[in-house]
Image (cartoon, rainbow over all chains, first blue to last red; front, side, top):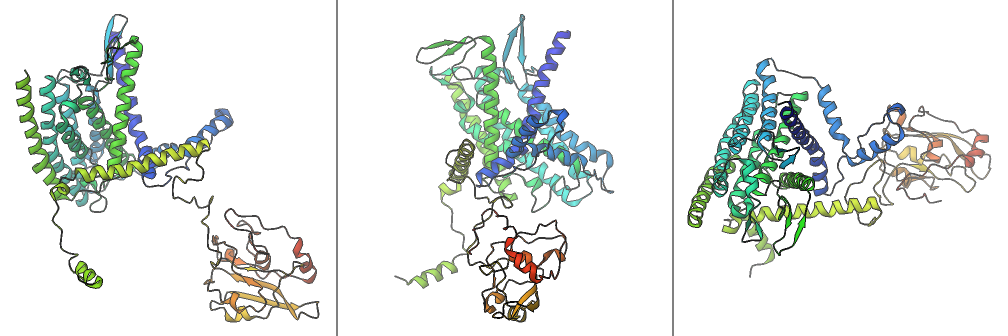
Length: 375
Length: 219
C-alpha cells in the first residue's frame, strides 16, 4: 500500500514538474519565438552573478550564457511579480478575489491527472501506468475540469468590482459556452472510433495500424474532428486569436484588478491551459506516447523488418515521444498566437455557433455511418 | 481605356466599398495556412542563422534587424549634423581665431567664446575658452557655415548626449578639441580657460577613445 502511494506520488510529482516547467518556460518561448518570427532578437540581457561560495566563475559563466539566451527572464518575471504589491480594490470581495486565480490555476493543473504521459511500466512484477489517475472516463474528467477552470475567470471578473473586469468575465463565459460545445461534440467522433472514454485506452488503440502501414492516430481517422478540436481548444486557452476576455486594447480583461503574483497565477493558468490543450491534442489525435511502429517488444516496420527494443528503452521512447509532440504543439499554438489577429466578437460567435458546431455535428453523423458500415 | 489618373480616381472612390469575398477566401483556412507558413519560415530561418552565428558560420547574413544600441551603433551618413568638434592646426592648436561669427549667428545662443591674444603676430586672436551648451543647441549647423576658418565642424557622428544635469551637457574646449575625452562621470566644467602654455601642450592630450561604428575622424 505504501509502495502504491509512493509510486503515485512519484508519477504525480513528475507530471507536476513537467507541466509547471513547460508552462513557466512559455514566457521564455513567447518572447524568443515571437522575436524570431519578427526578425528581432528578443530577451537577451537578464542575468545575475553568484558569489564564489556558490560556485563562482563557472556558474557565473553558465548564468551569463543562459541570460544571453533570455532564459533567466522567466526567473526575473517571477521575482518581480512576487515582490509587487498585492492590491485588492475596496469594491472587491477580498475572499473571492483571492480565490479566483487559485481556482483558475488549480483546475488547469488538475486536468493533467487523467493524461497518460507514457506507456505502462512493468517493473518489480508490477504494472505502473504512467498516469496520475487511471480513470475509465478520463476524457469526461478532463473536459469537466477544463470547463470548471473558466469559473476562476468568471469569478475574477465578477468580484473585482470593476466594469472592465466584469466585461472580461462575461466575454469569457459566453466564449467558453460557444466553444465548449463544439469541443465536446468534436470529441464524440474520437470516442466512437476508439470505443472508449479511457484516455489510456485511447492512446493504446492508436497504436494499431490502418491497412498495415498507417498508424491509426486520431488525426487520420478524424481529420475534421482534429481541426475543430484544435480551433475550439485554442479558444479555450483564451489566447490570440481568441483572447476576447483579455483583449488589452478594448477592455483590459478579467484580471484588470489583479496585481503581483495573483496576476501571475492567471498568466500561469493561461500557459498551463496551453500545455493542457497541447497534451490533449497529442493524446487524442496524435497518438499520445505512441511512436509509429513501436510495439511493446520493438519496432515492427511495415516492410517486415523487426528491431528489438528493451522495455526500459520502450518506456523512455514513449515518454520522449509524448514530450516532443506536446512541445511541437505548444510551438504551433504559439505560432498561431503570433500570426493571426484577434477575432471581432461577432465573428467569434459566428465561428463558434454557426461553423464549428454544425461541422462537429456533421462529423459525428459521417463518423457514425462509417463506423456502422465497417463494423 | 481610361487614363491612369482616372483609374486611380475610381480606385479611391471605390475604396470604401467592400469587395465580396470569394468562397475560397471565406474559408479562411488557406489564408491562415499561408500566414503560418510565412511566419514559420521566418522563425526557422532566423533560428538556423542564430545557431550558425554561435558556431561561427554565415556571420555576414544577419539573423535579425535589431541594432543593439549601446553595443552596436547605426551607421550614419557622413554629412549628418552630429556633435560639434573644433578642428586643429597641424601643431595641434585650435584653428579657431575667436572671430565670434558662430557665437553671433547661433540662433540658440549656445556658444560662449572668450578671446585671447595669440602669440603669433600673423594670427590676431585665439579662443581662450570655447563652450557649447548642448542643452540649448538646435543642431542647425549655422556655426559650421559661418566659420571662416573651418574651425568648427559637426561630423563626430556622436549623438548620444545624455547627462544627469543641465551642466553635464556643457562642452568645454578640451572636449570639443578631443571629442569623447570627457567621461560622463566627470564633474561638468564651464568656461575652461586655455592659457598659452597649456595651449602648446594640446597636441599631447591623449587621443579620444574610439567608439564602435564611428568612422575615424578626418584629419
